[in-house]
Image (tube, rainbow, N blue to C red; front, top):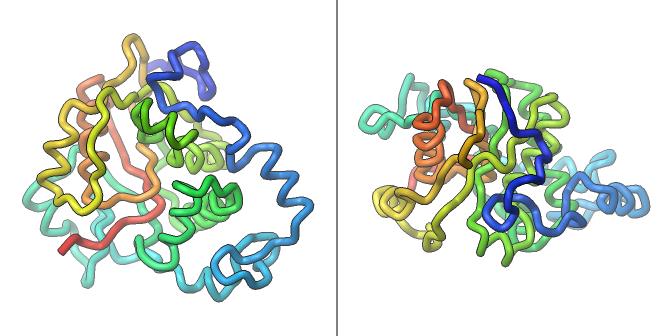
Length: 261
């Protein structure tokens, strides 16, 4: 399928799509490069000297939990190897496969909070670097395009940027994959999903996403998000993309949350 939407297409209404409103906040932008050149690297978690050119020391980097033993379909952390986790056996997700190199928890949650809510250029840069390093160790099937999970226009105006887009851009540039940031939109604002179980999350998200009209998508795409919790958001996005004619949808998340109790 032909792709008619470029990586930085600006022809669509930015009030309705997940396009960053504040260009200065891009983690890979000129301001971030200047800041990095002037200030020596300091660990964002402990304040010590950064490891090489990274704003994270080796000790804190070692504290990040890698998600090496996980369900190959949804990336849920497992205690023992299995072809599918119990949830996938009961309710197979619509996406083909999921990749999430880290387990969500302390201290990774501190870095993510700084990017998501603190407008931290340095945190975004560190997270992107860690993600790229993990991808080089174990590269999933390469899609034809990356689609960041969009924010609703009201949330985007409030925050000023979409953290999924910020993380997707460096990945796309390093892997030479286009980012289709305007192809998928969030058409309905939904309540905060924190502390909700998977069933309630799925109900909240029904009809919350749509593919922009007259956009042609490639046959194989990957959805990009910062954290995959229950997977409800990514499941709904994948369903929408498959209904729009995409043949294969993968999920790329930086971190996967352990099973909710």
